[in-house]
Image (cartoon, rainbow, N blue to C red; front, top):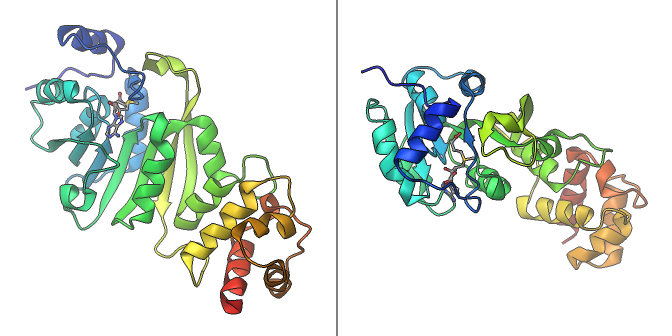
Length: 283
Ligand code: SAM
């Protein structure tokens, strides 16, 4: 059976009308209507036939169709119950797609995907971009690559280097686990409804080992969080919010050879790691 391409304005409108679907802003529903963008995402994911892909939020199946056509075994998790019956119809011709009805922040992903390694490919609901990406990375699922459409401004924060205003705790966390790269920007008119912000596709290749060696990951992220909690404060002051005695902080900074008069936004991942590892020794 030849399936019509869903990633077109008229096809998408027709599907929504025939199922009487009003799109939900609350669920971050902005559906792709540009097949070139779908192709670009699928290409960025570099899919080999038969490999497993977790898609988050398939909507009416627009990107899912591109992934299925590329030969991926797709497991797609959608929260909106109204779309489950739509997906059963729009993707009826593909036996390599399995739809799971659930909340991606709650489902047992390892159990649902049940593959030794997989990729994540998604046009994410923007209201929960960070919890989804960080959740996937922190759970240490066997994911090798994430290719996601997100807000352009968030993508820029993820790839930012020390020194700029975009560099923050999110940059450190994403770069700790992955090598992120912005693949291309996507304008609002590629979706219906058009979102109020620009979008971008970002590819994050998960590292075999984190970017820097830390003795205690939780302590490392506490240091990062504290350093960025008040961006204008120097490390001497900002790190006090960790509830650690000032003296110990001074000692750790000295041992890590980092000037306490610097601000968190100037520190590399290696320097954050050096502070956390020095604090660990002193505890
Ligand atoms: N993939 C489709 C596309 O590219 O046109 C739709 C993308 S739309 C930006 C985001 C999708 O995520 C919507 O279908 C929405 O219902 C779904 N969604 C929102 N919150 C979710 C959650 N917590 N778990 C799973 N899906 C969710």
